[in-house]
Length: 566
Image 1: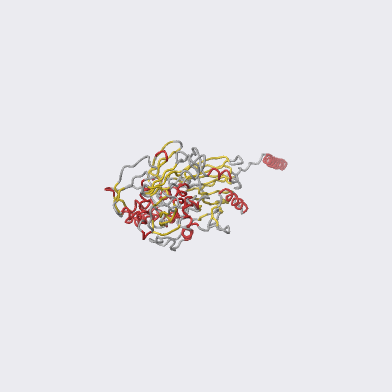
Image 2: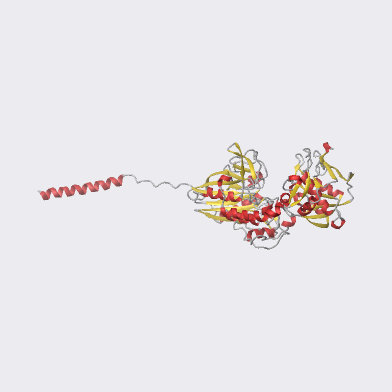
């Protein structure tokens, strides 16, 4: 009996075990969670222009709220970037050109070597070239990339310490020679986590008009959109999962600096965007010094993101891309311009570079070069008194027959990069005039006819129905005046030119001083190329220093007038 009962119990246990297994097998399997999108952070800068120290207070719009704060400083940029990278496994830092040149004295006096060294420390990986990267010529730009102490300008390289060169990569996809070779690579691919991102870098196609033609002789700047499209196709063939365009061209918004908005976007970036392949969904821009975040429709209806971080390191653009789980397609984009505030802190190794160069530049900057008696400004003037001052200094340096016997001098408005506010008693320091003429341009005296002078002045204005200034206006030296009428047809807008009160005669020859940028046709003033060089007379900054050292009065503006004001 006991054996029978034991047999029944054993059979029941076996049956229940089979039943349990059967029940488990009949339950639905637990589904594995679907993989989410891949997050990728891109941090971006543009138009830093060697501003190692904080430039000052800036007004900006933050979520529609007007704010004002001291922004910038490269050590604070470094700390801001470090803070933004926290929590992001997949991150890269890039820029859209003009990281050097047109810089404050503390960087420019040392050929922007300190700017490159500081940017090395903050983790910059890739930047496009901008027009100002070419200011000192191709050889000097290559030295910025490669390092070394080769002398390519009138200033002494490696004046403080050996120069290692940029640890980041310059891209120049639309800067080519006659054989189509680029001055730097046009593209780069970076493996960022599980994603391969292709970057295109280029400057604006008008770069040749914005720098001295001598600085880029033998090099050409291709149209932006078709070049970017061709490079994007090549990147995709090379296995890039997504393509990002770093372009030194931009737009204009109002207000100028915005953290998360794009109010009233206009400018030369718009036709570029219209011509881009829809696969280029992210465009990081520069050049106009405006700060914006724009979500725009591409030609196929998809959304494109356009950003700019303004200028001088005021902001860092924090861009987040969402890619599909396979990392092959962008499915979401967002961005914000993060203000570089004092409370963000400072990166220690970056700040050490700044302190070293500030200390080296201090005695140079504080040296008093002369005194300037100021006068009241005329708000009705077209040209600025500082432009007149520079033109007068150029004429003073070249009026002697030994130095060319100049009668007239012109300076382009874009060539005077800062204003001048003398100190106590009208004292002017070297550090105050250096930002006005930071390029170290040389002066050339040209022999030109009156007709050629008129042609140059006509080249200030572009368009027919809507007339605008092409690139810069021209301010003349004392004794020369001219007036214009924009209602007239192209080529007939200059209605009066006088020297010493007497009309300029078309057939007569005159001696005209300009910087080498203008002498080579810069800013679109091609007619200067028709003048014959008869003398060279040193650097523009030296001429300004020597002129102010005489103890002069600030000039009265009003040498340029509209016809209605005559």
